[in-house]
Amino acid sequence: MPTPNGAVDLTPYAEAVNAALSHRRPAFVATSTEDGTPDIGPKGSVFVADAGHLAYLEYSGGGHLANVRRNPKVAVVCFDPEAEPRYVRFYGEAQLHETGALRDELRARVNPIELAQDPDDTAVIVLIRVDEVVAGRTSHRALPRRGHQTLCN
Image 1 (tube, rainbow, N blue to C red):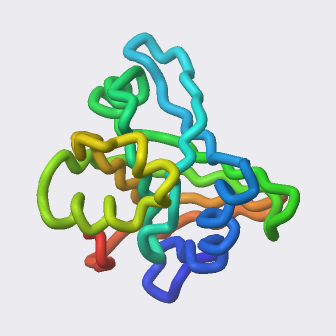
Image 2 (spheres, rainbow, N blue to C red):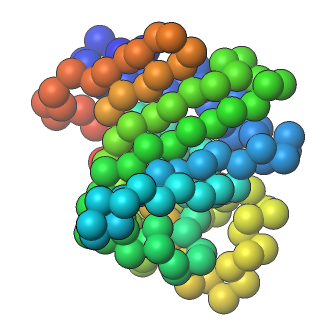
């Protein structure tokens, strides 16, 4: 749902997104290859970082990371029949955080199961500014951003 300043508010989705892995239902992140071929894969570490951003720990270093470096537009799908809403899609633009205080702060919030996959602390935090949310048949788009500030800006 849009906030008064026009941004998408992810707060209503935080519980469903953040609890999905405990129900053994990771989110799926979609990117596209250099030639535009869609690529989708599970990301168990997806969480609501703040009212306008999702984040996840990218520890595989594979195709998704290369795709986001070339084209930051992503989609994230969460489906959990035990949650409300059961199905939600997020569309936005990703930023990669390989070092720095924000990366470390967000990494500390990653669920322990996924964090254990990065024992050497070399993974990248992918921070996604969400511009549209589709939950069931309802869509919420952000208005053009004008000075919208959040923890992750």
